[in-house]
Image: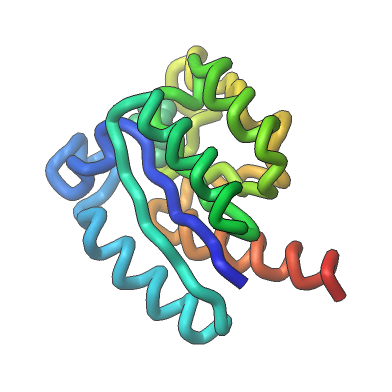
Length: 148
Ligand code: DQA
């Protein structure tokens, strides 16, 4: 099983960006932690971050060509704005879990709406970097149940 860990805008700044909200772990820390978990779960991971909407869309299209089985996606601010990313995910029909470090429902009202969540398998938010691990575990379990 091959999965893609996808990060949207400003997540390259993880560790230095608003640490009271997003914590002190860097994106490299997240990657190392997820690679360890992926080993335990027996799945392969690719990691990708971009600040550009079009670049993220192109990566999602490529995931489809490459036969990626699922995506763990933190879309950052595009969560709340991007019809184009939603269309890309719906278009390739790759199952994905939306993850957020912060609890987007407990912050500014504009963060409560996700344009992507309605086409996702589900959403994990508010657990810091643990949101990614929970999202990965959930997606692998979900995919295995469906294929078994
Ligand atoms: C975020 C939440 C978004 O609202 C915000 O724009 C981000 C990070 C999170 O992981 O908590 O960039 O996706």
